[in-house]
Image 1 (cartoon, helix red, strand yellow):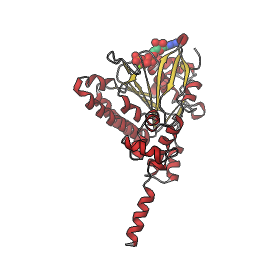
Image 2 (cartoon, rainbow, N blue to C red):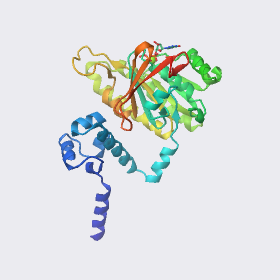
Image 3 (tube, rainbow, N blue to C red):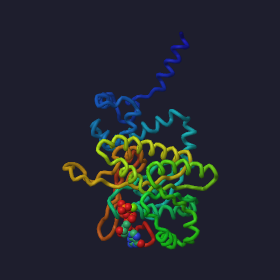
Length: 328
Ligand code: GTP
Ligand code: MG
């Protein structure tokens, strides 16, 4: 009996609840429970703005609580030193712009994470992808990951000529740079999903792939599931795909950059008319989410959206002949 009790106690000690999170007291926990959020999992998948609104707390408190919930859940599956070790081999890829790197935490996009850029036509999503495909090949001390890129092209927008120009601008050999970018045209969403397994295999076989670009993440899903009754199916498939992507990011220690279009919904009279395709499903799966738009005098503006780790800032960058830069 005593043993039973001990076990019970041990279990009780381990099961963390909402009030174990920083900034969440019994009053706020009760509010969350009445909104259907009972445990760490429920809170971990919220966006900071959702949480701030539901719980009536400030943005900073909401971010902290979400970050802590996500961390605690991961810690449930590994010891603290393992967790530490897991973060040690994270690597970064410079975007080419210091301002944009700073927006993303200082060093650009990171491995074991999905970074999403969404925005209108011509906002710079593809140009950023092409720039990253070049920069990943830089040595670590120059902001790269000393590796190859995989470019999954769903729309036929990959341009070798642009790669050559971007490589030239950083003094790299354009032909060598092109050789280190493995381009795959995904013909439909099934094909797009299958390619993920193939990438995991290639990494296992020793290909030094450090970056995977998916341009665009959602176009095929959107085209194939466009009927009125198909939205739920589409979201489910997208959800599975994102889950597979995150697994690839973590297991193979690659950075994942995805592009996403915005919806122009003429029926929508209220709210933000520039909503990303896939909505919350994509938003929750992306570690970093940026909204790109054209700024003044040909500049581009990037805004970080609902990041659990970083403040929602925005910054200006440029697209030049040499790709993403801090000036024109
Ligand atoms: P969609 O895929 O259509 O949704 O758009 P996107 O966001 O991928 O746009 P993309 O990244 O292809 O941006 C295209 C824009 O980048 C062009 O309209 C130009 O403004 C700019 N751009 C592309 N190539 C060059 C270049 O060689 N020099 C300069 N200065 N700008 C360029
Ligand atoms: Mg594009």
